[in-house]
Structure formats: structure tokens, C-alpha cells
Amino acid sequence: MFKCPKCGAQETLDAKFCSNCGVDMTKFAKTSNSQDERKKRRKKKIIIISSLLVLGVLIGASALWWSAYTRNKKQTENYKTQTKALWEELSQKSEEFATNLKEVKKIDDFPTLGDTTDEFLSFLNDKILSLPDMEIPVGYSDSYEKLSQVLADYKAYLENLKSVLNNVETAEDADLNELLAKADKAKESCRSFTESNSYIQKTVSEESFNVTNIVKLISDYKSKQQQEEKAQLEALERAAAEKVVSNFISELPNAYDVLPEGDTWSEAKKIAKKYWSSAGLAIFENDYQVFFASEVFYRGGKVVSSERSSEGKYSVLAEERMEYPVDIESGSTETSKSLYYFTVQKISGNWYIIDRKGR
Image 1 (tube, rainbow, N blue to C red):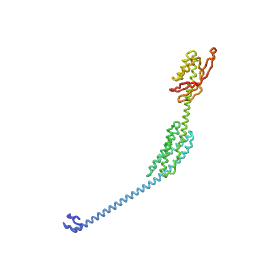
Image 2: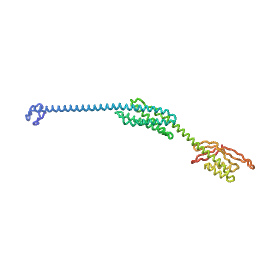
Image 3: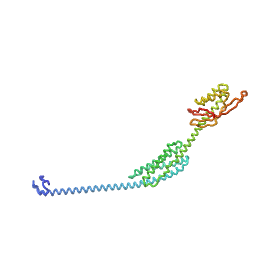
């Protein structure tokens, strides 16, 4: 159906005249066809223009992609060149440092190793400062992060080593364990970087992280130092324990010499209280009162030997001398010597006799 442009009546497409108003329909059909042709041409132009625009965008995008590709390719080549050079330097430094570590045979070699460590640290600091200047190509961010981690971990390990070398006297087991842990961490960082970057051919010397010899030297030194300190302490304690016994057996005869006709037992107890613990005074009273109540005279003695029985307690062997009257009229006497074990213990910072037994 077709609509008459004059009266609006509906006609068939092949009608020549309008059945309502009689207008020539063929004329109108030609005009309609002309409009369709113009629409088709307009649509074709739009398609062509759109295609050209799309093509232009594609060409522009391709040009940008190619530019970015070539730029990234150049960055990649530069990055690999820089990292290769850095890694070769690091590898050489590590080999030299490994040699220096092996040359350390005693504590006296530590200062020389310390100087070498300082040089290595200076090298690492320079490389760490230069990292931000590197251009990171697309796809190499992980490589860059691992390289940064290598330098940081290596530096931390060497700083810890230098601290231990400078503080041997105060180094604790925790410090040595931390050194070993940081050495292992730095070694693992180096291994991870080389494994993830196949273009890196040289490897960092793993012997540059082998500080077991350093740790052993320090441990042996500390152990020897502790043994010497323990021996010195035991010597001081032994001397103190022997002195208590020596003072007691040398001072007790004064009870007779000072007060030969007085209350010698009372005087002896005063002397005993200085050296016997409160618990041991009963032993003293039971043992020595016999001598003071009889004609037996206590004349001192000497320390023979001593040994440590436990912490703060010593067994001291001493010789005691007693005089017995042989002839009262002539006043002649006879001297006898007896050996006794004194148990001496440190109580509240002071040393006391707590027991005495005959040998």
C-alpha cells in the first residue's frame, strides 16, 4: 500500500492515479525513489567515513603499541645489561669475601675481616642508592623487587656480622643464631633471583655466607672465658672457705694464751661464734668442751687441703694439734696431731663452719 501525498488515501503500489482525488501517482513514486537513493548514498558515506575513522584509530593504536613495544624492548635490554653488570660485581665481591672468611683462624683475625666487611658494605650501599635510577621494563617488576631484596638482605647480614666481630666479649648465643639466620636469608635471596632470571649466568658464592667458623671461634672463646671465670670464682671461694677454718684453728688457742686462769671456755665460745653457723655451734660445744674441761690444751693447726662439694659448700681437711700433760710435776707434755674434715658453707654472703668430723 502507498499513501497519496495529496489527499492521504491509501493506494496500491502499482496505481497510476489516485482513486480519490485523481492525482498522478507515477510522479510521486519517482520522487519517493529519489529520496531512497539519497538515503542509501548518505548511509554509504557514513559507513565509509566510519570505516576510515576505525582504520585511523587502529593505525594510531598500532603505532602507539609499536612505539611502546620498541621502547620496552630497549628498556629490557638496558635493564638486563645493568643487572648483569651489577650481578657480576656482586659475584666477584662475594668470592673475595668468601676467601677472607676462610682465612680467619683465630679471634685476632677478626679486625682484618671487619675491614673487609666495611668495604663490602660500602659497595652494597652504593648499589642500593643506584637502584631507583634503573628503568623497570614491563614484566620485570618482580625481578627488580628480588634484586632489591638481595642487596637489602646481604647488607643486613654483613651489618650483623660486623656487630658480632666488634662485640665478641658481649656476644650471646642469640646474637650468633641471628647471624646464622641472616646469612641463610641472604643466601636464599640470591638463589631466588638467579633462578627467576635465566639471563643471569654468574652466581654469588654461597661460601660468602658460611660463618660457621666465626660462630665456632666465638663460642669456643666464650666457653673458655666462662671456664676461666668459673675457675677464678672457685679459687676465691676455696680461699674464703680455707680461711674460715684456718682462722678458727689459729685463733682458738688464744683463749688459753690470753686468759690462762680465767673462763677459757667462755672465751673459746666467743671465737667459735665468729666462724661456726648457729646450727654448727652445738657441734662445737659438744666436741670442744671436753678439751677445755680437761687438762688437754688445744694448740691450733693448719689447713691441709680442700675441695668443692657443691655450689657454695666446701670440704676442708685440717690438722689440729693438742698437748697432753705427761708429768704434772715436771710439766712435760706430749703433742698429738689429728686430721678433721670441716664442712664450710656460704650463708647470706658469709662463710661458716657447719660440721666437723674426724678422718
